[in-house]
Amino acid sequence: AGIEVVEHRMHKGTRKKLRQGGRRGISVRPGKREDLPVFFELMRSSCRRQKTVPNPADVEFLYRLWDASEVRSCVRLFLAEHEGIPLGGLMYIPFGKKVYAWKKGWNEAGSTHRPNELLNYECLRWAAENGFDSVDFGAFDDAMALSLLRGDPISEECMASRHFFNMRFGGRPVILPAAMIYIPNPLLRLAYRILFSRKIREAVERRKKMDAARQENFERSSEMTP
Image (cartoon, rainbow, N blue to C red; front, side):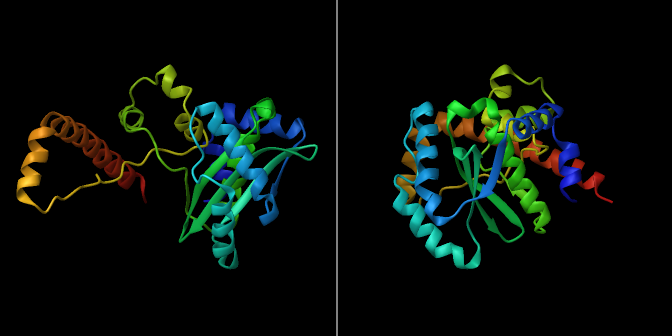
């Protein structure tokens, strides 16, 4: 529906932070192949704060992905900078009618300049201007998604999460069908059910709640569609 509609759906606090980033001199530019080492270091910076390791594990993977995808414009990179210093980066993959925000990284030294807000906005703006239907920010916590779709009170943990950060751009969680596993051997299948019976029951109950919320959300969306 265009970037104007996207902006209207954004949380007012997010729109305020976007204006702050602009006033503080942040610029966002398209990245090139030679920017991949810089982007990987931004990813490593984020991973250190989260006490995890970057995935992919080295910049060589990014080079291979870029070389295989650039011809068809299937991978793109945005970098947010302040006075020429990179503060954040976002790599995204356009596919079909959807844009997938794949990897991001940022330097916490520049957090007050709002690089992440500006990067997400630029991704949304680019998608809207190039005729895509939606932007997918990736995984979303199941319990948070269920609470949000039910209209439950939002916890402080949820509000401080990256999931809610993405929600503030006007998006909503979409609950997908459950993943399934099939064990062909009947004896191993029986053993699996016995060993993990409690976890299976819990997963089934959780899935029923998720499916009910997904169906309710689908019906509500259908009613709103002219």
